[in-house]
Image (cartoon, rainbow, N blue to C red):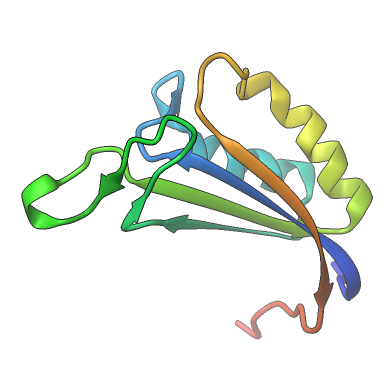
Length: 116
């Protein structure tokens, strides 16, 4: 797969405990993106954050949170990302998960598979 120049970055901010049928939501998103043919996906686990409900989640020793912030980042061309975003609505109903989804244009400078 080739990817260069203007592309799109989709960011999905969720909680570590969000699940779909017992599977972590971030796993559901990444495997769905792979099946859809998205160029790349990365899951980042935050050490502290809050969202629309203003509850702070932190990894500090005395206040260990079981629901740390998770950010799923996906990169591909505009049509692929927007198509995936539409297909994703089936497992992210608005009433079930607190989430923030952002979309931005990015300039891909280098995208290459490993030589292994």
